[in-house]
Length: 259
Length: 294
Image (cartoon, rainbow over all chains, first blue to last red; front, top):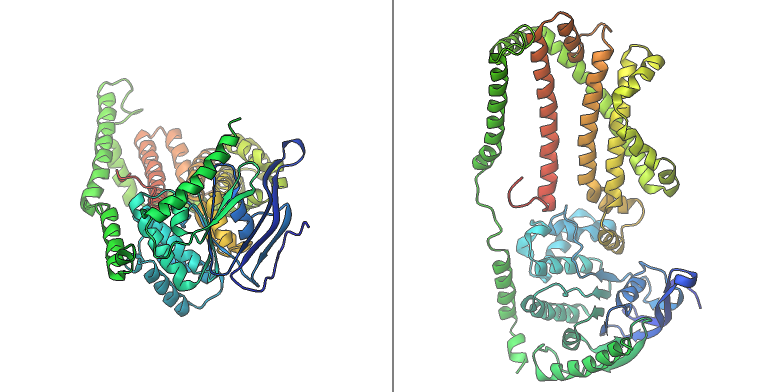
C-alpha cells in the first residue's frame, strides 16, 4: 500500500486517489497533512476542492502532479498522463516573452520549430492573447498573465489540469471573465480539471462536483454535485444557494478547531 | 436568463479585450532616448566639474608645492602628451592583456566552482564558507606568497588576480542558484524540464542577474589585484600602467603620475559601465527595473 508510482488507468483523463496519505517530517514532529483521501474523478469532470487553511489542498495537487511523494495509498492516472499544474501566481519565466513561455513545454518535448510556432499561435488565440505574443510578463496585467500560464499549461497537451487557486489574486471582474474562459476551454478540450480554491462561490460557479476537505489532517468530509446547467453566472440564485450550503459545512469544520 | 448574456461569444471577446486594454493602458513610457541619456549624464558631468574645481582649489591653496601636486591644467597637458606617444598605449595594452587573461581564467574557475558548490551539499559544507573567507582576504596580502612561489613574474600577478576574482564570481553563481524561486522550479519541472534541462531552461536564466553581479564584483577585485601586482612586480621588461606609476614616483614626475592614475581610473570606469549596462538590460527584460529608470 505504499506504492509511490502512478499506475495506468483505463480512461486517459481520469484521476483516481485510493487512501492517499501524506506525512511531513519524521518522528515526534511529523505532521499528517492528508489522511486516507479517496477520490474518483471521471474523464472530463470538473472537480473543485474546497477547504480552510491547512487542509492540504495544495499538497494534494502536488502529489497528483508528481512533484511530491505520497506517504501511503495510490494515485492512478491515465496511461502516460502527466497532469499540467497552474498556481496562484502565474510562475511565468520573466526572461521570456509571452510566446517564449508558451513555447517552453513544446521545446522540451522536441517539437520542430515550424510546428511550435503554429501551436503557440493557436494557443495564444485560445486565450485571446494573440496580440501580446511579443510582450514580457511584467508588461501584462495579473489576469493576462494567468491566461498566458493557462496557454503554457495547455501546451503540455495533457487531458488533466490541476489548478491551485489560479484566480485567487485577481479582482472580481477579471475573475468572472476568466471563469467564462476556463469553462469554454474546458468544454472545447474535454479536460479533466481538479481545481483548488477557498472561494466557495467560485467552486459552485465552476464545478460539476464540490469536495470539502477538513483541516489538519485533510480528509474528505463532504461532497456535493452541482447540477446547475451551463453556462452559469456566479451571481445567479442557484449558485448562491449551493455556495451557502457548502459555506455552512465549512464553517462547522472551522469551528471544530476553535475548541 | 443566464444563457443570453454568456452564449453571446463575440460579446465575451469584446469584454475580454476591453479589460486587457484598460488594464495595461498607461504602462508605456513616453520619454525620448536623448532625454534619458541627458538625465543620467548631467549629474556625472557636474560631479566631474566639482572634483576638478576642488582639485584646483587645493592647488591654489599651496598646501603642497606644485612639483608634488600639479594642477588640472598641467596634468591635462601631460595626459595629452602621453596620449600622443606610444608609451601610454603600450602600457595600457600590457595591463589590459593581463587583466583579460586573468579575468577570463577567473570566470572559468569561478563558474565551475560556483556550480559545483551550488549542486553538491558535501562540497558546500566543505568549501562554501572557504570561498567567502577567500573573498574577504585583501588580495595584496597574497603577494609575498605569490612572489615566493613564482618570483617577480607574470605568473605571480596572474595567481593573485585569479585569487581575487574567482571567489566573487563563484559566490555570485552560488547565490544565484540558491535564490531561484521554488515556484519557477516547480513550474519548470511540471512543464517537463528535468535534470540538465532544468538548468538550461530555468536555473541558469533565473540565476543570471546574480551571476552578472558576481562577474561585476569579480572584475572590480581583479582590477585592484592587478594594479597592486603591477606596482610591486615591476621590472619584468614591460612598462605596464602600474609600472609607469612606480617609475613616475621614482622620478618625482608628478604630472606623469597623476595622468597615469587618471587613465587607470577611466579604464576601471569604462569596464564598470559596460557591466552596469548589461545589468540594466537584464533587469529591464525581467521587469524589475523601477519606473525612475535607474
